[in-house]
Length: 147
Image (tube, rainbow, N blue to C red; front, side):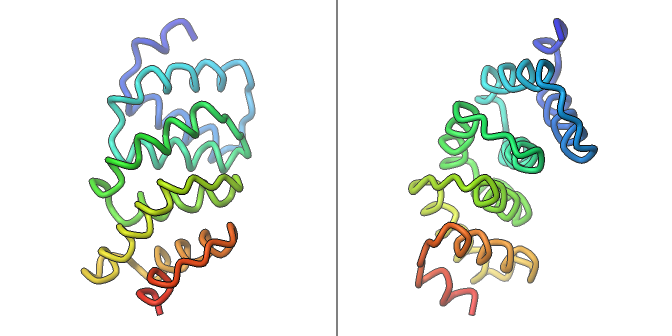
């Protein structure tokens, strides 16, 4: 764990994904990984943010400070990522039952633009609709664009 500060962002996100995919809960290591992610968050791209938040959700970890920081960072970066990054991010926050109004407004706007530009797959559309429904968010313009 002492070497975590030397890891590249991709190594941090790949490790988070691996632990989540394998459902490995190692509290001490995950706390250290979370702390390092918070420090390095300014370097994270949209893909890195979505992988990290997806990993937290897949493990059922509600790391408030990291999730709040990811939500804030995603406000300006989510449109830089691809449609899967968008879907993974909205899925993760809904799975963790964490509503962040500014983030969901940006996700809605980005999803509508991507829908108009035909960038969202049926899976991305259904994931986005599911996430908004799960959190009881009635976003008529978004739902209308999906319909």
